[in-house]
Length: 277
Image 1: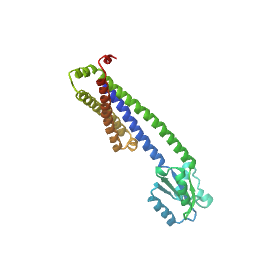
Image 2: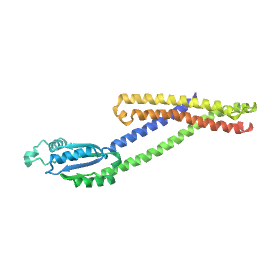
Image 3: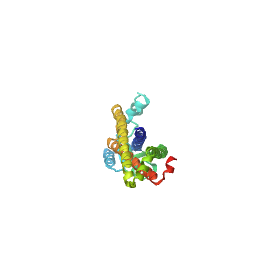
Image 4: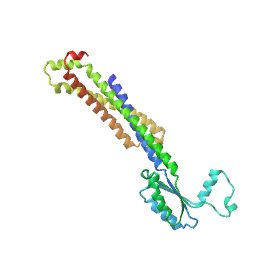
């Protein structure tokens, strides 16, 4: 029971670590898909030119979202952001803002090198006055995301290694406590396969139970998270969560089975004098 609870705790840590990785990946994708460029149309741009651009971007493979802002909407946005209620149109005699199109690209194109040829082609289109790209911000975001991915990968690898070592030690200790039974079975003529089979099956069953316990705990935490926050459901889709929870159970069974197989073979090879060490 102690070994089973300990293995359950290890599997819970692995499961939560995997779910955290999925959430971080989803968050990264959301951040990347908000990157893009802004197209400011020319003063003489026609409605047909604007609609042509909008239609082309709504079907482009590299575009994730398109937002059109009319001069009137741009003016209202400026008034809201500045808090200035002064009628700038009356003051200047015209609306100084031009139509704008915000284009968000997919995560694959969310870098400056991929966006430059696209921007060059857009700038040459009829009706386009200016194309704005916040290259420094995109580079900074990508560098921060890459650093976070490297750190997260190192931490995940370390936790996985520690978890494997802990589960292996727990199984070895369990079989170590029954090493004299293994030796007694050898004395009465039992074959190595006959001796090994019950230990491997018992360890696999313990790994299965530990996996179900871990899934129950993780599932309870996720159910509470889904009930209290909708953003969690967006970061961790149900289908991906199901794969992770299934992987936790499979990992528990596989690690316990392999560890039991190796540990049993170890005590099958050593003689009686070494059993006391």
